[in-house]
Length: 601
Ligand code: DMJ
Image 1: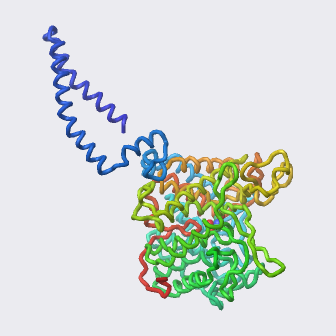
Image 2 (image 1 turned 90 degrees about the vertical axis):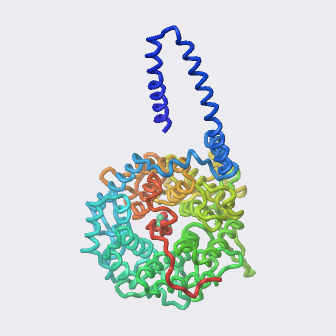
């Protein structure tokens, strides 16, 4: 813009000077006089013009008191007094796609999808090194990869790939499989994927028909004493089964992360049972509230109570927190009960789990591990362990603060401090700090973050262990020259990138794009399989990296989708119109047309 106005100004000067030169050719002795007159005229005009300009500026600053300080802060990169973050740098980037980077992400998606299509079309999972597919059970595939990827193709505008994938769904998809599948995974990846494809394709009925077929096969899992769903479902028998590993128990994330999908299906079909079954789970969870307000990772499927087990934001409870907020958003903020449950849970997280590392003061969330004493008493041991899963939480907190913690709607980008309540402001700051921590855990040899990190605490005994004492965080059990522990791997997970996408949308701060780009490049460098696809790496601190022969389906449904959205402009899937399920399948926000018993007033 400034180039254009400079060019314009130069042109005006040239046009003006022309008659002057003509005049001076005729009357060379009056050149100085004319110049003096011109200068005087110019001075007079400037004085006249300056009055309305100053008036205009005065009114503008009166109406936008922070405009001047914002400009200064943006120039020097200071945090504004009135706002969170540094607008200006920021704001403009929001509406401009970074086309080159966005297209690079599309190329990566094509590299993944087309290899899968070439070697394993229709198989549930893909193994890029052996160029093979495999199914989750011996009963045959259920379209795990195809359905999880199809909305990303629609969003990226990959029409030909999309048509072939749709054709596969029309011709080959079959849920009549006599085997047990995870209730949670089948819902978030398949039901979520089908519903999203239905909406994004402009209501192509094939997806809704398949979604209804699948949901009806899953519904019997809710037929338990407590109404909490069983972990496994046999799709052909239409029957729920417990998990072999922990019969009678269900995980909190699994039971509390089915709601967005079944509620949207209920909205589309008018069938209340989809709604009431998943809503009754939330009612059970609300009634089971423990005194500290936190959720353990396991619940008893008969009693509907929490059982003493780890408390954390990571695996087996992560998306419980995510869906509390998203259920409130999904129904257009009409169900107050979810706001209350969310605020209550987040307060407890702040009270009990949010901690800082000793040196760089990195903010993280700890775990609480229950310990049963011989006298029967239960105590909780704080463990400074943070799963990669937790990295969804920074972005989620930021989003929550602009909704449940806002005084006005919508808040500015980034929010003005006066627009957030005290709680909202706390969540915003915790959220941005957690996003930064997750980014900082990419400080590894590959630039990729491990599956699990531990933070230093005074009593960890690490100082005596060896010469290379970690400063703030470390990968537990990782020793040079030895086989890496499970925690050291990067399995193409999306959580940090998901938070970067949300943080960018809410702030417009380009640093989130820069961090995302750096992670994308690391994936390209260390996980890409030249013949096609991407693979897990078993140690983020080892270069060249060693790969494992698996490409998780969430690479195409989440990781690459979030990267694409990070570099695209805000018109694609605006956050005030869509809520993304935990597998990054976008579902539209709607106002519910049924009134249910669980209104929570
Ligand atoms: C995804 O399947 C979902 O995001 C789920 O909620 C947990 N995490 C994996 C990806 O890491």
